[in-house]
Image (cartoon, rainbow, N blue to C red; front, top):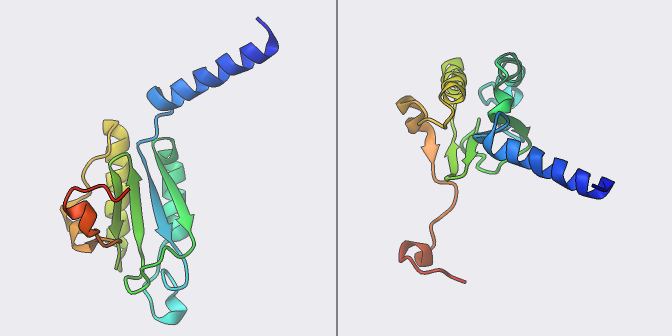
Length: 146
């Protein structure tokens, strides 16, 4: 087998491992730390970025549920925004003001990792769920706009 064929086969093995094996990523949590989120000097509640990153690292959560700290995600009227990205779509949450909200997020991430599937977020987080984008009339009627 030539070197190029060997590299291609190895690449396919790695891809299969990521898609089906130990490296299977269930989803991604994207947290905003833009112009408002976590900006206590502007009167917004704190975002425990360092604590959350440390907990994610200690629990080795990135292997199953990736954590991304991002710039501004947009809905600035709901400071402390995060979204969960999964094969099912995106779920948006905002207005997190207390440490217990982040404790719930962490506990959910650990439980999802342990279960091997994305579980429903705790019911208390539904109070912070919002629709980020308007649903178009085409989508509402089941018509594909393309």
